[in-house]
Image 1: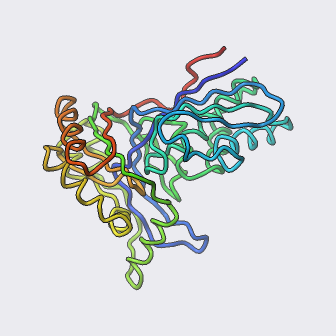
Image 2: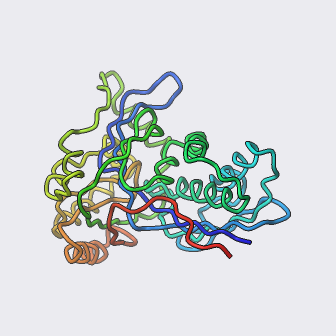
Length: 300
């Protein structure tokens, strides 16, 4: 028997970052929106825990037990006193190390798939608890839709969304390490008082009402200056997208993927074509949000 789970990418429509905590993490007000770029994670019984991957950038995905999908299988199995003997295959379509939670998506997908394969019937609360142990973005990959993440991002409050938002995502060459970007954030803010992160009421209202123009005016990412400091070329990509008619642009999460909000699907296609023609990115993808969280899509 095998189980396949589909899991979406995310964009942070607001990423407010507080100062470094004693444990090295940062408090966040992180407004997630799931978007329709997906990885599919398939698990089947095996003699031992193994991971394979195909798709764009698959060569950058670790296939050992540092992969969040493998760690998810191990954590779930340990809670139930069973061996994590599964083969995990990841069909990769979310950019790797691109600030869109591709690794987190794979962790959430493997967790849900293994729970179904093993017939454990874990509660949503138990799955979310394991997700939080795996990483800050993993709980949202399970939930999808839109949500406000607080703490280090793992405590979720689901948000209402009143419409569909159209996006273009421009992929850069290479990745950016999230810990390195946070380290650069700390360096850039050294000696200054970093305010406590708070979700923007205007942004939450724009999501609730489906107001694209209002959302465009409220997008913000406190990590963007750090990402641009480490990868100045992203500035040219942001300029190319807004010059092509995007309503707003920002670095997605810790980058280096850049995100462009457009008024409709036709505009999104035009911005994607212009970004490719500009030579400032290696690929451009059109997607809509919100998208559903991790879902079982087949049992074989």
